[in-house]
Length: 130
Ligand code: SF4
Ligand code: SF4
Image 1 (spheres, rainbow, N blue to C red):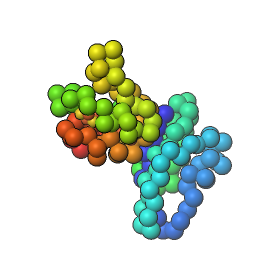
Image 2 (tube, protein in one colour):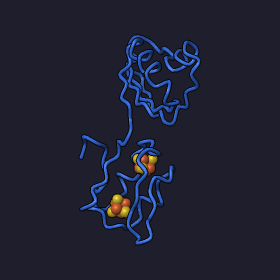
Image 3 (spheres, rainbow, N blue to C red):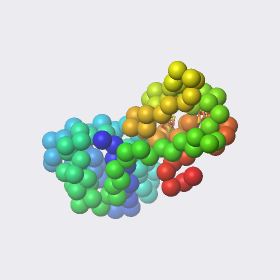
Image 4 (cartoon, rainbow, N blue to C red):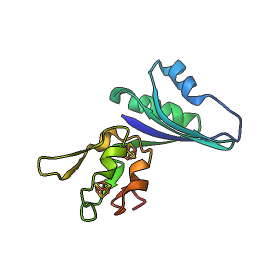
């Protein structure tokens, strides 16, 4: 299961993900991280059964945590099945069905944003940002 973790760095550079791994024993795969001097955002992947434990631990350390399930939105009315997103996605989220219609497996997405930028019809968006 994927969690989007946002945390402030104003009180110092605490290695919060490393601390959660140490305290819970859960192995965390960091799929994407954007960190600057004031805040950080990390997309992490953890076993489903550890989701609650890790989420509570991170929140206890001051981080905001969102569980990501199907976070990428495809507007089928706008999509023209051009395939630009198929080529650019590093996670193989997109494919075509037997009729050359776009298919999307949202659970594989790491929200890198490349397909959103490249789509010529603005058919892709992050949920809540369409
Ligand atoms: S890039 Fe946009 S229009 Fe093209 S197949 Fe992907 S979602 Fe559809
Ligand atoms: S946001 Fe990135 S990982 Fe997710 S579907 Fe688009 S290109 Fe693939």
